[in-house]
Length: 111
Picture 1 (cartoon, rainbow, N blue to C red):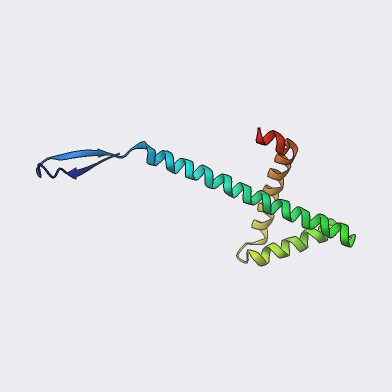
Picture 2: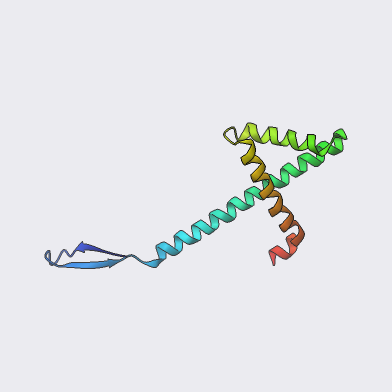
């Protein structure tokens, strides 16, 4: 990408300024890091919700469906603008990612 600027020594002469590719690389790196951070936060939320469900089932001898509905209710309070369908979609996606990484094991991921 080129831009022109004034040359102060010769006002009638314009010289091109080349914007370095570093800006583009930095943008790509930032986008990658943002996506990884979102994934990490999503995994933490998913893990915590799973723990809440298991805790409810263990403590109250309740059914999985009841436990999931309680967790969904709590999430809806935190995210008031989310629809039921969107919440189900996000939960399903989060569950798939959790199962994928859970099967790989943390030790292998760190390698």
